[in-house]
Amino acid sequence: MTQLDIVQIPVLNDNYIYLAHEATSGATAVIDPAVAGPVLEAAASRGWTITHIINTHYHGDHTGGNLEIKEKTGCTIIGSRIESDRTPGIDQEVSDGDHIKIGNAPCIVFDVPGHTEGHIAFWFEESDALFCGDTLFALGCGRIFEGSPLEMWTSLSKLKVLPGSTKVFCAHEYTQANAKFALSVEPDNAALVARSKEIDEMRLKGIPTVPSTLAQELATNPFLRPDSEDLQRTIGMSGGAIVDVFAETRKRKNNF
Image (cartoon, rainbow, N blue to C red; front, side, top):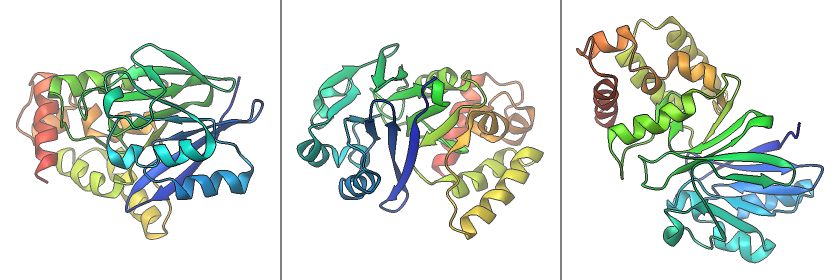
């Protein structure tokens, strides 16, 4: 078993960048570097050498630091095959089912389109770590910019079958706002009510709510729960098709 040492770096207003270090080989990956400076400083302060960047999608708040980090470290940039022409400095193109390694740490790539056409996620099974960019958030999911509700639901369905112990390293601190929406569509979910209170307490103290676990998300995230009778009843779609319920839930979040 090869465990990654994962460091979370808050940047901009609500972004998270991650460093994932594999101690045996010394390899270190940066996940979704919005900016370069804080990443380079965090790695240097730990004596880590950045060897890879992995991008979940091409948006600038996930790739803005690519070229500067690559220039200063000579690292390899791994990103979506579908979005290779929009990913700055990409060296290695990957897509669904591909296997990569950061040092000795194996990773499986998933295609998870919806937010963008070529969005991908990276699952490091031996570290119980999922880097899912803007597809799955704590208590939320990404806006559907370049896909359909069916595509996004299919993408989330790939992730929701991973082990419940999987840590969800999403790219933004949106959880408190997401909790308010979640309560509006599933108000009788006791686990959600309790989690929302805990989140409020954490944010009051400045504590990150990310990562969560997939088990927490399955119990409380409305975008993984379109089969919930409480949710369906609240939005007036009891017995509705799962994809339709998901689509209506996402539509309501857009306007919340």
